Structure formats: C-alpha cells, structure tokens
Length: 618
Figure 1 (cartoon, rainbow, N blue to C red):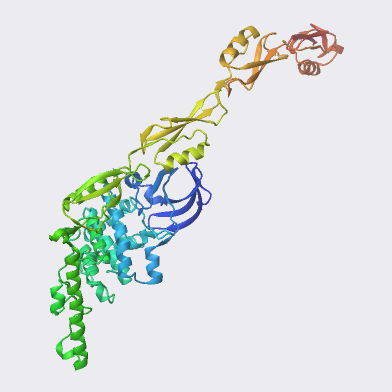
Figure 2: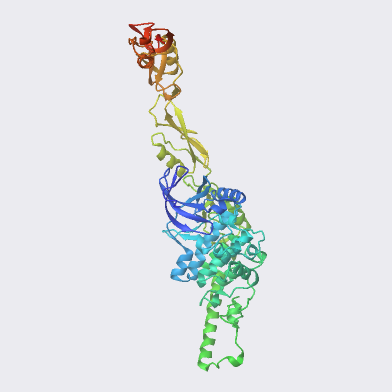
C-alpha cells in the first residue's frame, strides 16, 4: 500500500519514498504548517505491534528531539496515526558517506580525520545528554550540499537492537559490520561503544572497506569479538602512523582500553589534522614491526609494516645501490622528523622577557555546554571568563566561540574567553503579522508556539492581538509563547418553542442575537407562539447574528370536502387529503345506500386537523 498522499497529524503530507531500512521506510514529506520539506520515518508494522518496542521508541524519539547540534540531523516530531508510528526529521538533501566511499574510494587521511572529528563532536553532544547512538555507521553519515557532516538515526536504531536481530537475514547486516565487541555479545553498552563504531567508520574511510566482513551478521559480530583487525596501513599505502594509532586505539576490544569518550577521540583527531602528536598509544598488533631506524625511534614513531617479515631464505638479495638509497632515505626521514619535534618544542615555548615559559595547547570547547567547557579549560591549567552574545540564537549556555581558538598554545594561568548563547531573549512584536509568519518568527528565535483563539467583537477574525508573554518581555528560549488570535464569539441558538415575542426578545438581547420574526401556519403550535428557528435550535452562530424566528398563525383554514354519497374509502381519502381527521360511524339503511356516506358532521370551512365524523350505511 502506497503512502504517497497520506497526511500525518493533519500536517505532514507524504510525497515520495526516499529510503528503506531494516526497520522503517523513509519518505520525503511536506510540512504544511511551516512550509518546508521534512523526512518522515515510518516504522514497519512488526515493530509497531510490539508494545515494549513502541514505548522505547517513544522515549528515544523524545530524547533525540532534544538534540540541537549542527552535525546532527534534527528530530522535529513523532507520533501515531492509527497503527502507524512515525518520526519527523530534518530533510538533508545529500549523499551518505557509505555511498561516497563506494563511488570514489578511500577518503584522504586529512579529510577522513576532519569528518570523524565532526562525527565525534556530534556523538559527544548526544552522550552528554544521556543518549547513545548504538548504530554509528557510514550509511548514517550524510553530507549536506554545503559539505556539513550530519549524523542521523539517533534514538531509533537503539530500540531495534536485540540478540535475535543478528539472525534475521538482511535486517542488521550493516549494523553488525559496525558492532562494538560488547554490543555483539549483548552486553550493556555506553558511549565507548559509539567510539568503537566510529573507529570502524574511520577504518572504512581510509581503506575503502570495514575491518571485518563475513557471510552472516553473526559471523561478522563474532569477528569483532575475537579477531584483531588487519592494520589499516597494510590496506592503505602511505597512511600516517599517527592516524593509524588513533584508529586502532578506537578499535580496542576492551572498552577500558579505547578512548573513554567521543571528546577524547575528537581531540586526538584535531591534533592529527594540525600536525601535532596524538595521545593514542597502541601496542604492536599482528602485522606490526618496529622500524629499526634510530632517527624514527628518537622521534617516538612506530610505523606499521605492510606485511609480516618473510624468512631470510625467501627474501631476494637486495642490490647494494638500493640498500644505500634506502639507508639514505631512512636517515633523511629521521632528520626531518627530528627537526619537526625540535620545531614543535620551540613553538611550544615562550621566550618573551628572556624567560622560558612552556606553553600548552588550548582545548577545543566550541559547541560544548558551558560547564563541560569550563572544566576542560581549568583542567589544562587555564583561567576562563564568560561573555554572552545577545544576538546568538544557539543553544542557551552552549559555547559558541572561544578566544584563543582550540589548538592554540598558551601559558598556563592565562585566560580563555568563552562566549555563550543567552538563555533569555526579548519576545519580538508579531502583532502586525499573519499567524503563520508570527509562528515562524517565534520559532526562529527559539520559542515554542501555541495558538490561543480569543473570542472578541473588537477586531476582525484572524487578527493577531499580541502574545503571552507580551512583546518586549524577556523569556527563556524553549518557553511556550501563546499567539493571541481574534476569533468569533459563538452563541448557541436557544430553544424558544412555544414562547411569545415578549418572551423571546429579552432572551435574544442577552445572547447578542437579533430575531427576525416570520409568521406561518402551524397545525400544532397555537397562534402567536414560536415553532422553530433558522439556523436550528442548538446550532452555534456568531455573536450579533440574525436568527429567523418562526411564529405560528395557527392551523390553516381550508374547505371541507362534501363526501355524502361517496363510498367509505373514497370519502376518507378525500378528507384526510385535505388535512382533516376522520371518524367513521355506521347506521342501518336501505340496500341502495349500503357502504355509502349518508351524512357528515361538518361542512363549509374549518382549520386543518379538525375531526370530521362521517356516517356510513350498512
């Protein structure tokens, strides 16, 4: 059954399918209220029938809706339509990282590190709010047209997880490829599981494929538990040693041995992109050997080999010129690395005033909540001061800028300025706008919106009367602002059956209605009494409306048919057809008058419904 044309919550109109996953279909839809495209994920029926899953889905969707980060696909709404459950997300018209790797091959090391750093930042933001993704994979990383990295599927994949999922063909093959060891074994997971999965994504970026593949999801998951990955440098020529350390440290089997937070992983990736030594320390894995070059060792560098050393007998005897050039090259590389270390040490020192003051790297805290940022700055030995940007529309309390920027070198005890977004802002004046424009303006500055229809006769219907709280007052972003909209005063037409004009006039005056009396005959209501209204009694009408009131003239006076001489049936039909009631009496008569009307009680004119008695011979 196609979903195209379906409207959820009288708001989201499905336009076309744009994706299909292991637990849901994804559609492009139009948000009719805010006039924007959105992505609507509709859960498969088998999940919707599981009450436990639905409850977890509800909680996770609500949590995900609180995430507001530039590298996270926003969740706007969720709901239920009949037996169908759905979530509404930001629509990103872009390509997934998985598709780009398949089309273009491995990502250059610097680019891979920058992409992974952005993903780490998004994950850290979610982890700080108690939400673990549990399904970090290249298919859930999307690139917007402007190049922004977006992480999607927060809060949904988490609820699809269960041991039985591993055996359902095609259901979680992609997920198993990125499982952490603890996740593969069904153990409880935390933020470090996402770090491992991101390590798999980073491995895939630099080599073109994930570290483990297999014939089934279970086989792949068990390889994550039991096997060490082939060093990525063995599959990607020229991979920098520091980036390999970062990848393998993220892929440590024991969660206590890998990065303990996405922030730690991000910081090492930033160090790598800036040419600084990383903190990751990975013991030599199968396929790694130490390069016996004194210069390399002096620089603290261990380089993974591309293959395990072969026995001496199997090795071809190198020619002397090749060995000489190799020695020269290794020595040259060592000198360059040594010079790099010396330059780095010199750059880290401050010789102003003739004194040597060691400088340290300022942590990158942009995008973090203020408390976390302040702690990171203090832990590095720096002071901090706070500035507020009153024009910022970012998350209240979030660090939107820092001075100096992350990665800069600064002597301990120096001050780092943290600029944060304000929590409270002034409510704009929207009284001159339409409701839709007013709603968009309030949403754009961080408020939630509720419509408040106020019956009034002081302004045209639909006119905006202002807001609660009123314009100019300060309110915390996230506060519900009520937009006051002029609405009709509705009055119920009263029951005035059987009432006279003198009784009806004060009732209508009190209700704000205007009576329009219409006289007509009525067979049951006495003269000068009301027998109905238009619109009908009980219907709501606008205040000040005119209501027709039907007043009775009594029954209609009509001619009584003369039925003497007619047989009983014809006489009865004639009288009833004229609006009269008929009573039949019988009297003996001569044979010629048998079954004939020999007399009637009344002739001439009479009100309809009058009872006429006819006497029939027998």
